[in-house]
Length: 65
Image (tube, rainbow, N blue to C red; front, side, top):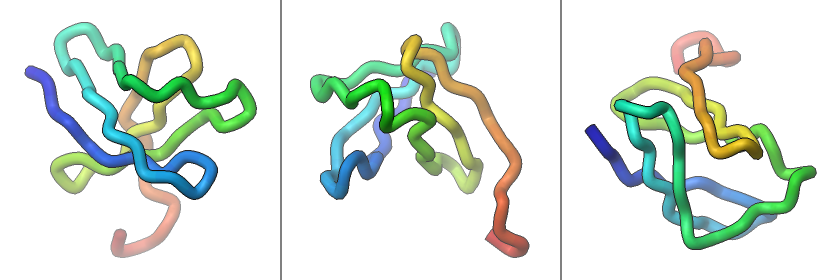
């Protein structure tokens, strides 16, 4: 399953596609190494995108988020 989500990178919103079969992400944008991990939300879950084009579900830092 693939899902498109919005991510904010260096103050700009970019579109990112999450591939839940391979746990890789793709985008036409190429964020700089220093921007990672990039946090996105999909289906009320929080994910971190990594510079190696993988991503993982992570716990929310904020209670009630």
